[in-house]
Image (tube, helix red, strand yellow):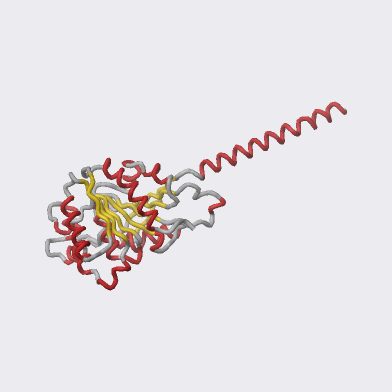
Length: 292
């Protein structure tokens, strides 16, 4: 009887040790998974556009930790270019790798080929109103965001660069930074593309005038300029849109609107945008408040 009792007591420390090891392993696994950058896709049903528009969410390291459950994060919205989609940034760049360096949420919306504008010809193509009235509200309601301009930036590439700068002028109260990489900033002056004609209408369409970037900059009231976000734009020296970017920077200089403009070696390609994405993220982190 004593021998069986002794064996039972000897087994108990081993069982306890195994339990402790298992708990430590579970804790390590939990910390590893929750402290890693995560990418999620939200299937959002847009009432304005009348269909589901998925958007990507890159969550920063530690977002899911219990110790961070009261922490709120600044948000960077990244707009894709023409012929792209919400997943383009994750597929074409090292976004996930770069995101590991920052305590910010990154949103990659779906914009179709709608130029982030309410269409002059298709009533349901309201890609500007979708971003401003639906998307931002949905993100703020589902994720722990800093839900004002102190903690919100917007940036984009090509078509998305045009959209980001336009949002900066039309909705300055929403963003602390509006940034463009290789922006197709002459969109409202063009008639050579079916998506442009569908979005902006004919050459004399009111939609073209109210969404013309240069006109928005020239007509922005001087006494309200302090309310504008910080503008950043860059373009490759071999990019077809170099002249329109340089010209727009000239308009901003003429109006004394605070901005940064860079001309760098490169073309209208993802290798250039991948390099510049990291810089835009750095600038966004500087311009927004830190996670709190």
